[in-house]
Amino acid sequence: MRIATAAILKPLPAHLFRVHGENAEMRWEAMSGQGYHTPIDRFFVRNHTGTPLIDPATWRLRLHGPGLRCPRAFGYDELRAMPSRTYDVAIECAGNGRRFYGSQQHDAVPGTQWGLGGIGVARWRGVPLRHLLKEAGVRPEAVDVLPSGLDAPFEDYGHVRRPLPIAKAMDDVLVAYEMNGEPLPPDHGFPARLVVPGWVGIASIKWLGDIEVSTSTVTSPWNTVFYPDVTTQPVKSAFELPWNARLAISGVPLVLHGRSWSGQGRITRVEVSFDGGDTWRAAELHGSHLVSAWSQWHVTWAPRRPGRYVLMARATDETGATQPLVIPRHPFGYHFNAVVQHPVEVVLG
Ligand SMILES: Nc1nc2c(c(=O)[nH]1)N[C@H]1C(S)=C(S)[C@@H](COP(=O)(O)O)O[C@H]1N2
Ligand SMILES: [Mo]
Image (tube, rainbow, N blue to C red):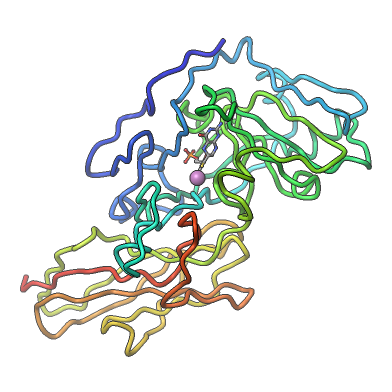
């Protein structure tokens, strides 16, 4: 039923991705000129082992455990025939930006050295997890929900799995089988994955095999050894530019594009600095201002002289949280959300 493969199956061309072992980070210039969603061909991949190939004809999603009155198994066609919901949601690795602890704050943290490309926003379609839990007779005593992946076990820790509190599971979590209007690609969790809005990427378990519903708190290595104490994502920003971009000036101002996001709510303000943080200018936000996805923005800039500059973008979300200039070291290198210093070179065009 499951064929284990090596790492990632989709093509990873160098102009779209930077590969880190079994993970592939999106280059931010790959979002330049794109619409709201991250196309599948450039959506980052984070795999603990390798993408499995799963036969949807024999696949079942099993819901079991003492928190359910009538354990159930759902097939692929059955899932697709249920009432569906469609959400625009970001999935972002907790370690996104880890490299800047070292390169910007001179306090490197081991682990995958993600720049800012460990994030993507897709249009996910699927069945609300709440609906499946109700079909399986979820009890009022249910406490945690433990989704588990069908990819190969990771080291000695078993299948990738991470508990979610029942309140979140009954709120806005989706069992997704479609991404940007297509069946979920193998690398992103075919036949079905969780999509957990606002939470760190590890919550969105791919290649779902079973979901255990418990009546007491459960743990797994993915909330004790790895990713302890991380739930929602903080506010962050990125320019849709290559690192060390060469920008040609020819009399007309440059228009720079970027995106900002937060796991806690909508983006309300984005400011940009071209002088190392001495002065800040408001960027213009456009498009939809969505919870749990990103906001697109642009700013015009007319540098007077060629030379090297540092671009900085700082966003604020509706809770009032703003990106700091420096953040304290995190022992695992998660949640790097300080303003990133993005180097560019301005040349005469
Ligand atoms: N079964 C399974 N689910 C998983 C993972 C995994 O390795 N196995 N990686 C998690 C992590 S750490 C992240 S950041 C997201 C990445 O989702 P993507 O590869 O679709 O971008 O999937 C999560 N779900
Ligand atoms: Mo992750």
